[in-house]
Length: 338
Image 1 (cartoon, one colour):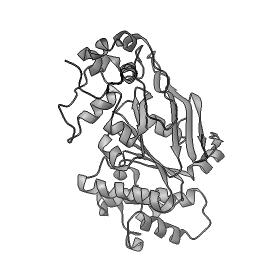
Image 2 (tube, helix red, strand yellow):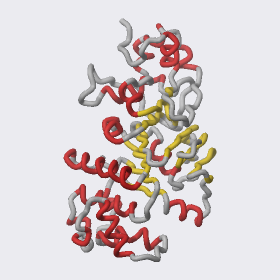
Image 3 (cartoon, one colour):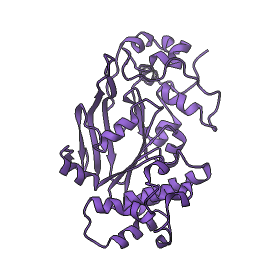
């Protein structure tokens, strides 16, 4: 860790015990992740990859089965007092403002709730007005007595963000923050998050399935598959020169992507049945095309597990094929040889 490190997860594991004899689910299976002060990191992957469980664990909402979360140099403790103090510095922004806002509470009550839970002793009225203004709801007094159903989707999301900002956190964890919004509003919310970073030095972990969103907001990207980070690096490194076939497949479906979209075969990730070898090999288009065989790594893909990626800020990919290509000097993102 460096002096600028705010959040650090080391060898994080979260396992859920199965019911009625079913296997245990390794939702998070050895993750190292670092977030710097004022940094925005996008945690990307399809449904079921473990990104939401990882986010909840970093928030202290799930206790890891193994590993450790460190915030600002201090290990996260799980007693009620420590967690309350921690959540004063780290706040969650949910994807569905309609579901996270109580329809019976006014905007003022929704934003003031965090202050009351944490026993804020200052001027509540001023603090709520300040948070709403920072979230782009101006003049804030005009929104105090309004109810969620009286607001647009974008305004409701701004109220949720104001509820997080009111406690002056150093980090927000935003779970699909624009997934439920119209396309015309998404850009406004992303611009708001960027402005909050610029004005307040606020760091953010943005959980999303959308690599296009990551391109527009993130400094770094961590791509998850079946409980592990399989590729990480700066947004430019990962999105302009993806090394892992899974990242390449996610990028191929973006509207501006060249060529045909990659259609992944096989079953979606199942954390109760993690395969041997590379955990992506059963769906890997590079293995299926024969390119891994030509690179001499097909056997390794099927049988040899890959090391857990470190939490450093260098570009990394957990892929036998990408490693082989790095040795030969060929671009793993290039089209497979005929």
